[in-house]
Amino acid sequence: MSDSSDANAYLVAPQEHPGAQPGASRAAASPADQAWAALAPLLAGRPRVRESRSGGHTYLRRWERPLTDRRPAVPAAIPLYSGVGDTRTLVIDLDTSRGGPDAVHRDTAALTALITGAGGQLIQDHSPTGGVHLYLPLQQPLGFHDARDLALALAARTPTMDPAPNQNLTDGLIRPPGSPHPRGGHQRLDTPLSRAYAIARTRNPAAVINNLRHALAAELAALHTQPANDAAHSPDGTGSASSGTELGHRPRRGGPRDLPADYLAIATTGQYNPVRYRSPSEARQAVLSAAVWAGHTLPQLLARIDGGHWPGLASFYTRYRNPHTRRKALLADWRNALAWVTANQHTHRAQNVVRNSPTSQPPTHGGHASPTVQDHRHIDDSIQQRRGTAAEYQWIRSWWTALQLLEHRRYTGRSAVALRWVLRALGEAAHKSGSRYIAFGVRSLSIATGLDHTTVAAHLRTLRSEDDPFLDLIEDDRGLAADLYTLRIPDEATQRAHRTSWPAGRLHALRPVFRELGHTAATVYEALEHTREPVRSFDLLHRTGLSRSATHTALQTLAAWNLIQQRHGRWHIVAGTSLVLLAEQFGCLDAVRDLIDRHRTERAAYRAAYALTRRAISRFTSRPRRTCWQCWHYRHHQ
Picture (cartoon, one colour):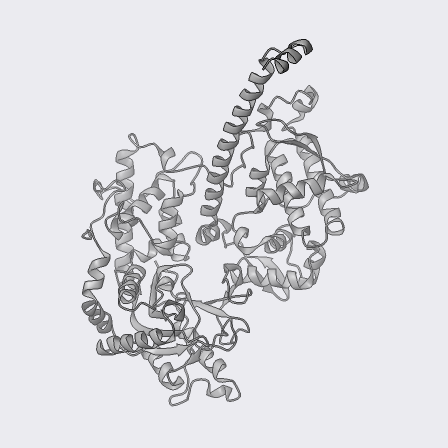
């Protein structure tokens, strides 16, 4: 497990000549540029910066890039926590929306007196709207839960403080001094730059945090209604088994699976339900036990922790300052989890912990495993016999070739990328079912495309209404079953599709990580996947059919997350970066699970309404009809 003092966890500013002022080599730089270059690298929890290209409304992960001393032109924020789940800067955000400028000034004075009385030194800046940021740099890293509790205790005393940045391990952000403000201007440094730089470099000793804990003892005690128990516990709270089990793992026949959403949320965010787990030790033990149930190995677990993909789980071990002690505690917890799972594997069903992957195969609208179980009486036996044959898979590959030949010229405009990904989802569905005949509902396709199901339905209508379409609608209004489509190779590409060699690589729908990075980035990544050698940016314009600006933005987004690299002017994929691990880190798998649960609820409501309608129709049609004379007699004698 990496120590938070490693270069990968914190970016250390370059050494300057003794006595030199920070930014002296940039005499012509503005005060905002100097403040950013001197302080942003020292205050950031990890060397990343997230820009807001929506005018300060959102700071999306797709807009994240490596942190440099160049001040961004748009509002930008730095992360508070490192990849191992701790921070070396306690941030206090005072917002005028919580009481007005006078209340902010009052709370600023009170907090400054409190922290100064504890022996601390602060860095202060303010925004054009009157909000204030206070920074307390620390010599010893502070764990996520400790920093969160201190922020909540301070917020209990200061009504204008917003503790939210300190409560989010992965998305806790703050605009540092010099950052552009959404309403114009920038974060102005109140502390003289030379003094602020000295505080950020030397930092505050650990005694300051201890003094603050003593001063905030009442507020901290109010946060914990139950006594903390720092012993390792099993997920059900009955205690762990002996730690004598040898290090290893519990293999699964189908290989390791994803963690359930609740355990994955703890591993990525560090937040847990205190009613279910009485202490952080119980929460971390529950995550490790779930990982053993899921078939993960210890190296796989360590890769997720050291790589920053599970910062929440890493934050539970920040109480151990020495890296060797951290690793020793983790290995002991792994032994406990392995022993507990081994002792309880006959009484606990793994299905309750390990669920099906949301990316394995999208379910059909009717809830069936495959369209082959539907009563497709209009499809003759010869077509059913071709399902899953080599000839059928070859035809699907030829269809994919035809799509690549025509999609750049046929699909242009704002909805072009979305239309192309709907077709890719249909192609993946055909490949999974082994047939060009597809009966996947719009909700299943929405999971495979990252689009809303109503948008998918609109795009399907557009695609099937083309003069020479890629798909035909065979049958609709099939009750509980999804509409039946068949893929077709357009007439204009029939000859070329069968002559052209099949594209390299697999046919993918939108993978979960690109729900966060965007469809354009997914298109560029797919183009790089299907090339056998590195390509230039200019060649990607031709391969993807995207504009120059869209391609450039996608390349920068992919490079920021180390998915691709440029070497000698040519781009290639970084083989060591896992799309699945990034999806876990971004919370994309949780979003997919939530969407599947929502769709399952909607399908159940639809089935209930459909059954009610069918019963009403059946009662109406089974009622005996009156003759014309009976109707006349009934109307005139009432």
